[in-house]
Structure formats: structure tokens, C-alpha cells
Amino acid sequence: MMIDDSFFWFKRNRLTIPGVRGEHLFMHISDTHISTTDELSTPEERSETEKQEALWADFKEKFARGKLPFSQGNDEPYSEAQKISTVAAFEKQMALARELKPEALLLSGDNLDHMHPAGERYLKKMLASYEGKFLCVPGNHEAAACDGAWQPGVHTLEFDGFRIAAVDNSQRTVSAEDLEALKSLCAEGKPMILLCHVPLSTDACREEMHRIMDYFYIDAETADETGRAFVSLCEESDAIRAVLCGHVHGYHEMEFAPGKLQVVGSQGMAGAVHLLTVTG
Ligand SMILES: [Fe+2]
Image 1: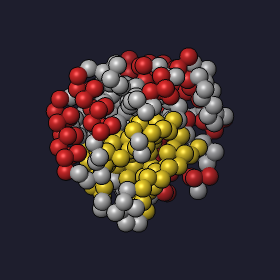
Image 2 (image 1 turned 45 degrees about the horizontal axis):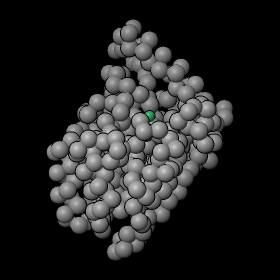
Image 3 (image 1 turned 180 degrees about the vertical axis):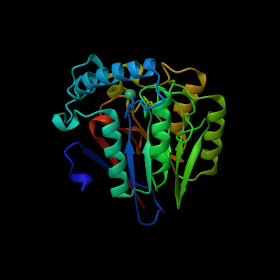
Image 4 (image 1 turned 30 degrees about the vertical axis):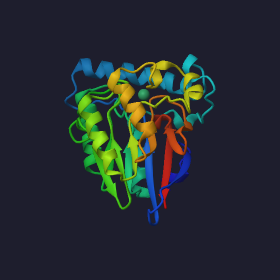
């Protein structure tokens, strides 16, 4: 059973949306930072991958143990089981998804460590062979599009009584087009869970987010006009019930507005998994 593998550590949340029938399980992972090579990789790509793998072998531990200025307070599982390559970690995550069979696998960005052809080919192949539904957003380490994984624009998965909407806020703002698309979805009124990369900092959670570092969140003090409008929409729209994100490489959960849950998933490359159950 993958679920018993000591690589993984789990956080679980339940979200109640009145009117939803039954229980709906979602597997949310973030920041898998895949770096890989294949037979088509150039020598330059190989050396970049080696460099990034070495960097994360060190950094993911420092994040987990709270050894970086912006990870202070983190004390997350980190032992031999977490000291595996980003590809080995991703394969475990996908195997876990195949075992758990969530209603959707949700990837909240920095799926790839950097845009590199072998990484894109690998991710595309892994997601194509996954039989369940999935939804991805790009992280700040990634481009706006990655064939087979994510595309520009707001994308949704529809369920009976709620939807999940993927929004690219990886540059600590959203595009005017995406903001309008999200407003239209909100106007429909169907309850919505947002999937994005960068956490929101709002009046309700500013104190907690400010303990991290402004690089890691989007709020009215740091965002541009559409970014500010995005944060306000998330706070004020009755349709938006929860936000699932990542970017911080540490787990946090908080309310970003009364009754609205924000879950910051920790680093999937070090075994973090967030399981969300939506129920009525
Ligand atoms: Fe990241």
C-alpha cells in the first residue's frame, strides 16, 4: 500500500458545502519541482537538471526543518524516506493517486522545477497515463502553458453541487482575462474551490502570512490592480468557498475570510499530501 510508505505525510481537511451529496475526495499536491533528463536532453539541459536536483536536495530539507529565513516555524517530516529524487517522488505521488482514486488530482504549481523539454515530456507522459481526472496550475517556476498539463485561462472541473477552478496567479497577479472569467464563474453562483499557486494574504490571515515573506503571497499591499481585484473577489464572492495553493514549501491552513478555508500545501517532492473531502 502506497499510503503506508514512509515517504508520505498527510494533512486532511473537510469542506462542507450545503447541498452536496455524498463525500468527494480530492488529492492535492504542490511543489513537486520535477527535474529530469531523457535521451533527447542536451548536455546543457543535463547539467541544469543536475544542478537543480542538488539544490533541492539541500533546500527541501532546509524548508522542512525551518532552516531558512522564510521557513521559520516549519517542522515537517524529513528523514531518509524523503531523500529521493524529484522524479522518484513524483512517481510515488502518482502511484498514491492511482491507489486512492480521488475524484481529481489537484496540482497547485511548481510541478516542474523549471521549464525543460525532458521535464515537460515526462509530466505529459505521466498525466496522460493517469486514468483519473486532474487539474494543474503553473507555479512561478513555470511557463503559462505546458502541453498536456495546463493551458492559459481559467479551467474548471465540474461536480454535482460545486466546481474546482484553476487560476494562474503564479506571478502574484492574474491577467485581466482570467479575472473576468473568474468573475463570470462567481456570478453563476455555483460553489467553487480555487486552485492556484500563490496563497492569498487578506485581513483575516495577514498576520499568519506576514510571518513568512511577501514573496510568498498575494495581497492588496503587494499586488497590482488585477491582483488586488482577484484577492477582493476571493474574499467577497459567496461562490468561492476555499483556496488550495502551495508555493510556500510549508503547510499552512487558515481562514482567508469568515468561513473560507485556505490550504497551503507543502512540498510534494518531500512527501506532503493534502487530502480534502468535500461533503454536504
Ligand atoms: Fe516551489
